[in-house]
Image 1 (cartoon, rainbow, N blue to C red):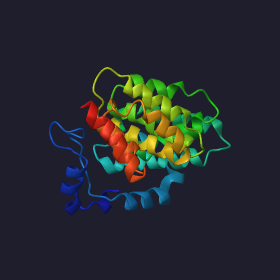
Image 2: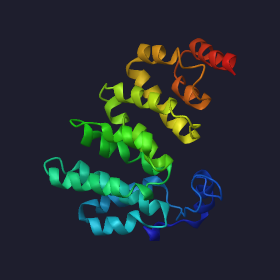
Image 3: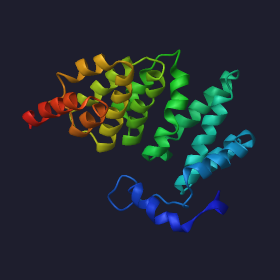
Image 4: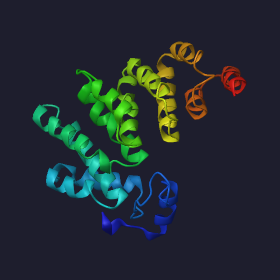
Length: 235
């Protein structure tokens, strides 16, 4: 990975992923490697990568190396459909290293491809526990974004339930959780547009503005403006 570093990209990536003091990515470091390059590296070596090497990579100080570890884990898991023990090991590794899955891209490019298929035929309490009690906004984001796997299969119940869980939290919801939740509601609405409208109707006035904007992004303009007006009247 390091031989593909590009110092000219480091400053821009650090700004994009909010790595200054007090920002959500504070202290993260970059090599300046773009995601398509990282994916190509993973494609060429995932089959020969063991868990010892994954351990070294997921704990790296460099963002792109941690991303490579997660993308590699996804590939190992995806190709282990006939090896439940290996798939269990992948999930255990993922859940044991969430402290290093510490930015939105690291979450979004890994969680639903791992926890989604793993929980497809299992109890999904894990996602609710992550969303409700996650130690970081990243663990909480894993809970909601993982439902994208189910949404793509036409199963939207968990997305709506977890969105309600976030709405019921007493403390203000972090902007990145608002965005993730609104995004998943929007995806659910693509499958069940009427259900999303009915779900939003009694909640639009009081739900966080960013979550609402993301959820209604694909609504017809007149309906989108009506929902926003409900929010504005409450404010």
